Image (spheres, rainbow, N blue to C red):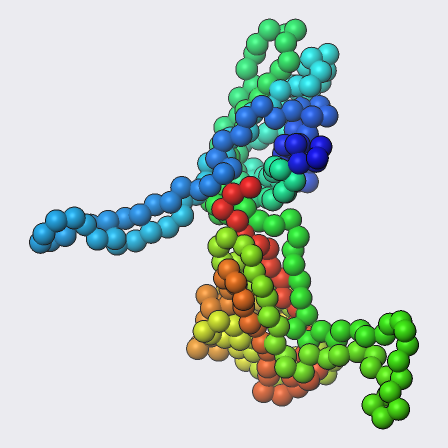
Length: 285
């Protein structure tokens, strides 16, 4: 119950430095903008008749504000100095917010910081303001799943069938994985492909499209694909020019509900290992 009653925030600066308002040094006093982003709908007047029609819609960037106060006024000088030094303009922060037992994170850039010069005997306070150009909260876990996973089956009691032998593992010969996604809005994949032997023109298929890389792979090569950023690298080198022109990066995203992703290759698909990574995205915390 105590965990559900706690509300805390942890700021992680771009250089790895951290400051937390978790009721140890600082305690949160106000949060604004975390519940939901702003929706924008664009309309145009009808040329004839009444009313308008929708010409576009989007989720706007999110503004966040956090206010905190020192838990022990005896630490005013030290904690105020630390906060003034920590919050810097033009720097990106990852913000972890915990509310009612749920923790999610979002990235924002500091747009303003206020530390009022109040009576020195009272608890010092600050307010930090952020602009989050990507407005959705992310799951803390970076979920990963191997499409070609082999599921171990050893267990107790031990069983040895006289005809079929021992079932030690189950391989995913369908080369397909089904994701049950409970996020609020779609999320793009990131994929890592390795292989046990030669592979020619690896391909990932999801939704209504696919991404195919016109290249050869050898054992030890690592192919990484970021579908949101449309970035493809082989062993750290950019090979975006080798993407099949019919490929669709936008198709490789996960929507709420059931999602299926599969892999193949012109040659060597039996030796491919494909791991997909994604963060669930939410409208609020």
